[in-house]
Image 1: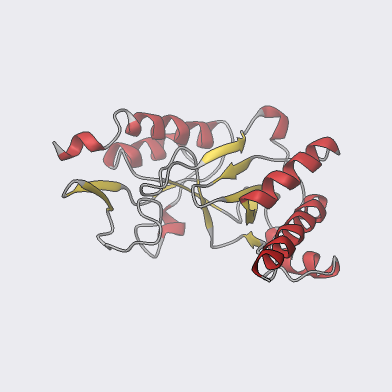
Image 2: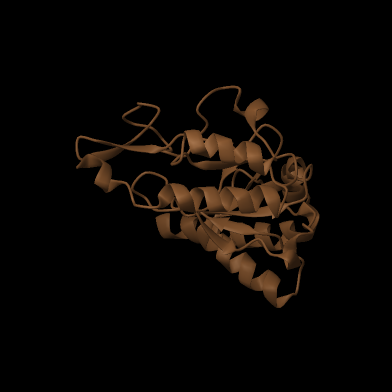
Amino acid sequence: MEAAQIPKQRGEQLLDAVLRYTEERHWDVIPGTWLEAVGGAERCSCGEARCASPGAHPTRPDWAGRSTGSGAAARRMWSEFPTASVLLPTGRTFDAIDVPEAAGFLALARMERMNLPLGPVTCTPDRRMLFFVLPGTGAQVDDLVRKLGWSAVAIDLSGRGDGDYVVAPPTRIGGRGAVQWARRPTPANRWLPDAVEVIGPLAYACGREAAAARARLS
């Protein structure tokens, strides 16, 4: 009875996504933890009752070395763990800029109006957005934001690069919902922007949202 609480076909949906990522985008992938039905509720397979990211984090410290860009290898991995979350290592084929959701949508609309080059963008259940940029450019984020007159920490903006990862759609994070695409990977956005091309609108939107939040508290 408990197993019925796990959505049907989820394993197939995850594998389909994994194969698109590896075969169409040539992204590396690694299976993470998954959700298990325990006592009428869903728990992370890591066994931690208060897991901060249930069903959506690496299973072991050496996860980065176990990732693969091979569709065949990925198929074998998810055949063994069909409901494992889909993690994409950053610092290889892409980096990511992580911003609050409200600021992200504001910046996204502005950049689309400006016809700026944009890569894929994810939206997470914990109200964050991640903008994919060229690998190696995520490490420049703090300096780029500082040159614009802000502190990246103060405006809640950060870069994800080598040694980090993003959780990919359609992974679900606990009972919060699934990671989704705000801008899907398509042939049109195969070529990713440099962080410097998008950091201005992102920092402006984050700064505006941070100022509004401070005003609400005052």
